[in-house]
Length: 385
Ligand SMILES: *Cc1c(COP(=O)(O)O)cnc(C)c1O
Image (cartoon, rainbow, N blue to C red; front, top):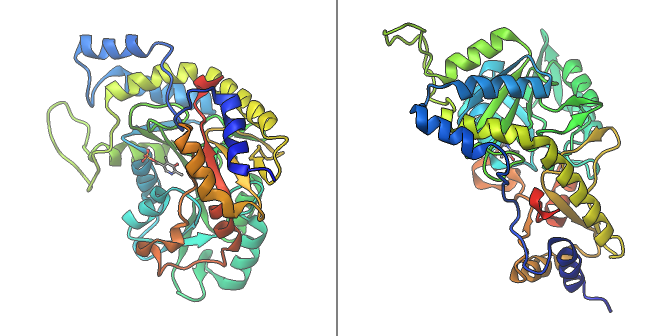
């Protein structure tokens, strides 16, 4: 009888090598030192300096988006994007229950209520068929506004999340959003470099957001960005994230309750260097996926999560999916791999089960809850290949 945890350790070792590996570490093999030194040499380390503009411009070019606003982290990006989209106190925002807690927190920061939706197994992310049926049965349209028939609250927006870099079916999603009068703000924190039918994730909705945390595809230390094609929204995002200060040579006058969410020049300098490395990082991640697929091809009861047919994933975090016959071994697998120095971890706890979100509205979530018991992230650093 095969011992699954041991087989999994062997397969992972074959890819990551005998010394083991962390889950995800950044690589700094380009101009990082040079650009950071430039900040120190010129004293522009903080909220003023040329790298912020440069990072925003280069990111916009890469994404094929008209505007990018750089901010302190991905959570702040989501908060401001939702606020500018028009999410107000006591409204609802549809989000997957299987996402990082930041997605739900950003909704709560707006005084709004997360409304949890179901995942599909392939691709990971939202189950659009179930979502459409659910909205048909549980909402009504009133003067082009979507109302939750049960809570009577406005459902203002939906935040799709491209789990571990695998895009959701954005065309299908945009159709549902349009049919039900719901705005789309994409949480593309995990999917920089992922495209849907050739177009970058984060550029489909009214706005999209990115994260450049230390474990993401590229990093600025901490950082995030708001993406939009509408000049007015970009202007508003820049204004609100820079304390809503009215531009003036010496006067300090503010015309709104703004936020100090601006990305410092030091972080943007790191971002400019990392952005130059992005094509190479994406190639490495794709090769790593091929290696894992090969290493796991002979092991029953486990598959390596691949990209959807309609998309190109960035393969941010590589992921194993256990099936119903092997899911009861997950703790043992986590134990065996982590003891062997190979860092693995389960996917997030479903947000609808966290105490602070327990009373929130939700669909039936059997697939999301099942996936939450069966997914394991494995070492994914670009320097592994
Ligand atoms: C990383 C991440 C964020 C934002 O994270 P920050 O740490 O605030 O930059 C938001 N949503 C998802 C799904 C993420 O993975």
